[in-house]
Image 1 (cartoon, rainbow, N blue to C red):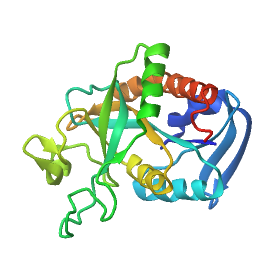
Image 2: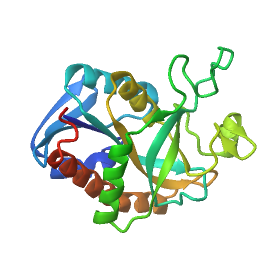
Image 3: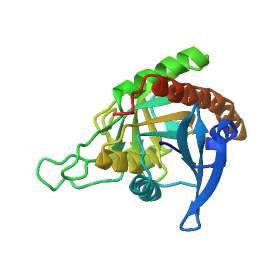
Length: 244
């Protein structure tokens, strides 16, 4: 089964619209789960997930109770780097936790949980499928990006100051975006050894205001993300990538 996680209903609406044989449940009578099929692959979609605390719990719960083979995180993000412009798509190469500070521990860096890698990596194979799908199914510009994920909203210079050293954010300088959900999903996926990738649309640059125009631009790109993920699911199913 493939898991797709978003924050708002808008984030996952495309997937809900193309799923067949749908049924719904809720976790703790709060977090919706929509089960169905896409290209004959079993899929579960969830949303109303706004922090990494919740995304870690919900992802872990689903992985404990269902046979999950692949995870997609969708929605919007904020660009730090000028090379990821508003309205463009960021595909995760890695996620680093932006609100973990255990640097007093030996051999632990800022953003790292002791005994775990600092960078929680996406599957290169799935990145390849997503990249090919974006190129094949849309004209959207995309970047392979480093996601800095925090339970705090990181969207202005003051909020990211603790993570900065010169022009680097947690050791990275280019193709950097921020969100509040991917960290928990990647943490759970790393612990369960399940491939995961985030595909998000940049809503704005750091220090820019959120506007209705920006959000409308994000919504327009959601169809590009949706088509790419659905194409990726079809390609993966045909090539038996996740059936080991």
